[in-house]
Length: 286
Image (cartoon, rainbow, N blue to C red; front, top):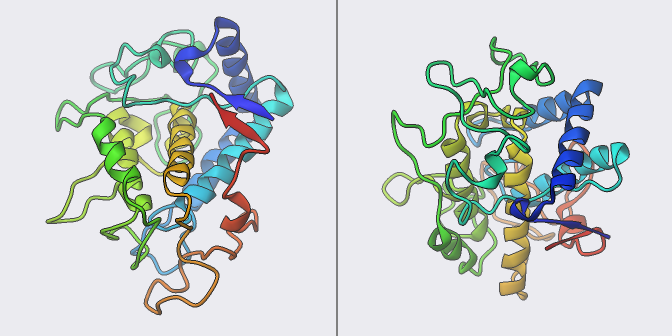
């Protein structure tokens, strides 16, 4: 059992050890493997293939397993390291502690949006982007997207999602109008609601965080640890609510073979959502 801490509460030593483990994972080539994995399973609901990671009920369990795999890789380097979470409802400015030079560095510069500060700045020589998507070798950010401004979600946005007692609902994709999963994942629905929560944060950070290769920016892990924490909070608020779709038969439709029910193993690990509903034996949030 270990703790995942709010990033604002990390000690100087904890920050140094975390950054060191991430950089070592990058040097080994294993970090880039995690980026490739996320790109591979970033499947939209317009594609005719299974989509375990996004726009589907398995958004939360898939990313829980993904974070666990990443965290295990970090802990093989330094057993005292864990993934911190970023509560963007509170730490919602470019001056928040996670953007300091001793952790993630700050915003990208004007023009090419290149991050120039912190340990993941290209100029430091330790963080080259190798995803094959962009020809630019450096990390980029564009806080708030000034050309088309976007803000970070607030506590009311999160509360609105946590108050929904249903986990997910048909058609089990980006246009599901009810359900905690899509309210948090945050796909906009024309005529109903705009982009929110999880997706809104990716847009606010901008740069590489705005695409399928978003794990190229280490803030990805902080953000998704908070997603995982919110799932835990929702379960505690609605103890009688269950992951949907369940293990039995469900509504037939075009998405029937593209989403994962409670006991259906998710690639690439062959682990079912039912095995990932409870993290309490592995880690806790403090």
